[in-house]
Length: 176
Image 1: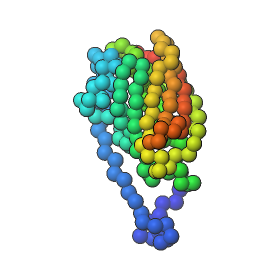
Image 2: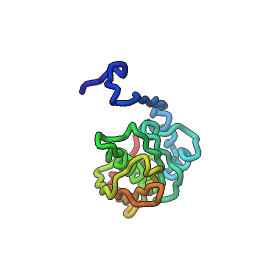
Image 3: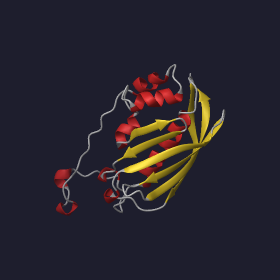
Image 4: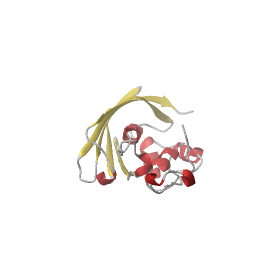
């Protein structure tokens, strides 16, 4: 990949932009799960008791609602997540969907139990741009389980238009 010094870029490219990302040691976040159920852990994160995961800080997503088997995250996409065609990259929506699906599953788990995604299927229904505004992703557990759990996701734009759906299977694992 060819990286161009902004001072040497053609004027047709416009003004260079930058973005600073700050995050905390992920161990500070994961240590909050010790002795808590998944729901208690998610409630602690949403209340600001500890730092968000680095991926949340990177793309600017935040949990805004949490209850047993259901979570809601929001993100305000910016140009840094655009693809070469001038649209929000599908990877942002996939990351958002994977996060809300997994966190919804996490709310159903007891203390000392975690999860990891086995798979995710995302259906992109309409293009997303800055004009789409804030994205709201709702993750709901459709089948809890002791070994595998299933969650479904809907992502809506600021006009409440459905822009993507997803489904994910999560493997339930003991935390060491």
